[in-house]
Image (tube, rainbow, N blue to C red):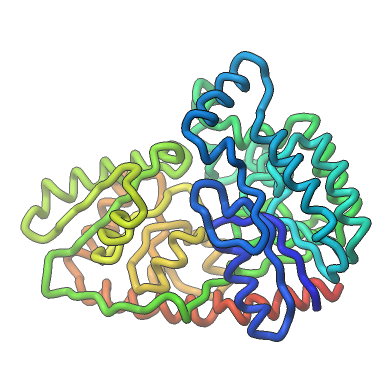
Length: 379
């Protein structure tokens, strides 16, 4: 089959492409490279404005004072120019409802043209969209990435990206995609739960991880227990990082001879990876039900990851608690208790490390995920 993957988040489509190519399919990715992450793509429509410090600052002023986003205008212009190349595909899959990062009204016009010159269209429920944001705003769930906002509406400014999806223009985009696509596929439990019982939902396919590119490293337990918390200040509130910070302060004071704790903020990727590779334990997020890409890749390397590993996830994969990952909760006392358990029982760190790698191989192998996508696309 000839397959077009539109957009990129954290190498999801790149890993999927690698699996599909192994299975003999022709795959093209058109994306911005996930913005500043600059992932490799076949056809790039990355914004020149966003890539420029000066132009990006100017654009921020345009948004603030004129309500005009020049990046979205540029994206529309650049993607329109690419349309003649993007035809004759058996499958088109969008990474998200806002895959092009263009104003919804304009995006609908461009997508109509894209759909008219190809066969089947599918949409991933991956990241925020109308369904997930509506669900987590209105359903009485244990918690979600929107919990901090629900508890404190003064944080609204930090959740503008999420809340845009429930505005009328994005609702119209959602309805357009629902009517014109062959279905929606979720990439993990956080998106599976909101999609349940939706008529266009095709089910969950686990995020593909290319294990051929990620080596497992046996943890060295002759040293102190190395705990790493890499903070992105832009997503700090959403991920519940404050709970990790408080827990680590208690652990550092209680076990100074047994632990080495490293906390960073917004450091360059190469520096981040160097520290990350030395860690035994990685603290990821406290508001998830399942693991995102950062956690999955860490598990593939054999790290013990504090991340989303809720009961719904355990049941879906038929797992027991604390076997392949530690379920992180927005509860300082709970996090301290779990960290203490690992520090005082270092054999558990090695055990979970091995199990984590095996889990990725069993459930997130990029070729197996690609096969599951092929099955969904047949419907």
